[in-house]
Length: 105
Ligand SMILES: [Zn+2]
Image (tube, rainbow, N blue to C red; front, side, top):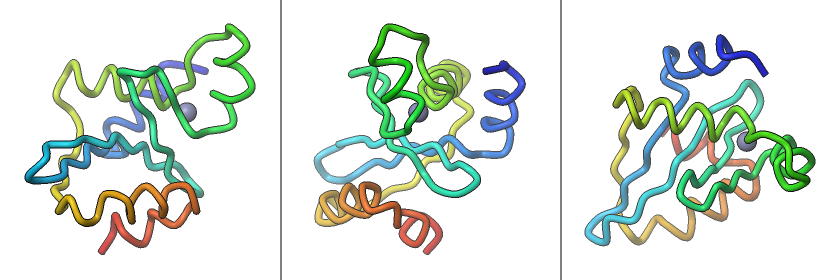
């Protein structure tokens, strides 16, 4: 996993921070070619296959987590605000791989 892929993802605005109000809950999303992945840099968790197969078996973190950490450090992410009422719906959509529809409304 090269750093240029991470840099490119950040430059293209692929790292999105979803903020829900009024609770202030946060979801981090990295937009990929085919779908979007929900990653949690605090928990060190990601919904992608790389994370499942590599990170859980002691390998390095997937590029989504690396991208989010770098984007957060440099404040180079896209922020989108939602209502708390949409939180569960958003999580469900991400799990169902349909978040593209919600993120691009
Ligand atoms: Zn990932």
